[in-house]
Length: 454
Image (cartoon, rainbow, N blue to C red; front, side, top):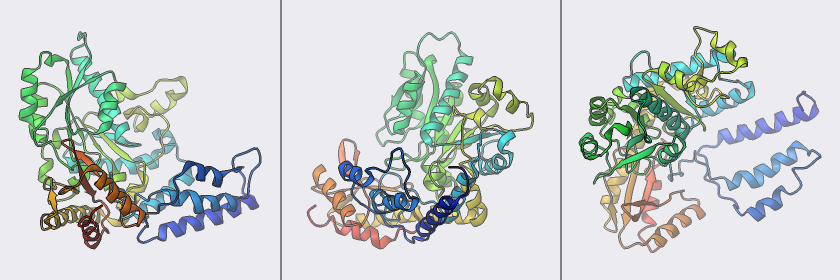
């Protein structure tokens, strides 16, 4: 299985040819084959067993049945959830990273890869205004990053007040990412949810919540969101940083989706205060055009994070003897780690940061144009002005079933993938823009289809 023989040669030619064709798709189609488990079972029947099969046969099943059953998140027609739009450069280098089998846990094993990754982390830290000593690592996604950062926040709180007899709490807004609640359960911490009328967590609201709380000493951290997933709202980062500083609380900023706006001059002022974060998350596989799975986790004080996450075992002693080295495994809960930051590094080097800024600005501008188009149509109503690249709106008179039928028809007709969401208990429409090649003509087509009954 590990030698280069005629079968391997066949696989190399076939798989690389398939990858070439996929990379050359411009634009990438949505694809919507059968997702019926019974039909997929029939197509895959007999492939997994004691005996092997011709690689072209297996690849053929993937190409004809499995791939069409995957909705392509990198299509400019993918406007639901949070899309992805990896550059061709990043995708190509991701293949190289996989072929190289880089075990990116330590400087000893992967100094070159880690050094390149750290250059990207430094770029992001500089854009956020974090100090020169800030650093961290790339993890699989925002969930892993939030878990790792809040574990450090909990440890910082313990060191500040080791005598506390109850569970630690984290102040969050009502629109914090779903991973935050799961993270707090895993860490045996509790959320102190501070609701706000306009869904934007503010320093004044948090200060009032702390003043009214019966046990403020149990609060370990304030968690702000720089671009909520549902609506793209940036919390009051400066005000929240003030409150966190006043009460000696850890200040964590979840910018998994929206943090890329730091590179967009038109919205950069909305992030003022992020430079005071103790930890910061941004997912390049979202709005920085990297492949899945890639999240950047940064700490103001990496040494504190290392004291929490560094793993101790006899066989790991050697990686810690490299006094000048940087071990990504020391800054999150992981050990095994692919060098997932390298595709972003390659693409940034190839295209330059200015091109990234322009691509991010294009999505922001598309959201603004979409909002204007919605406002001009009598049968539609804007829920709120977009701050980043997510647009929420309602079709006057529609019920939840109407939105579902609209979304299903868009996908069935391969027009777009756009899913409704909930806002203040109401079902509304939602379009999330990331791909710089999504045309305004497609937006108009989507909105036109809402003029008639779903």
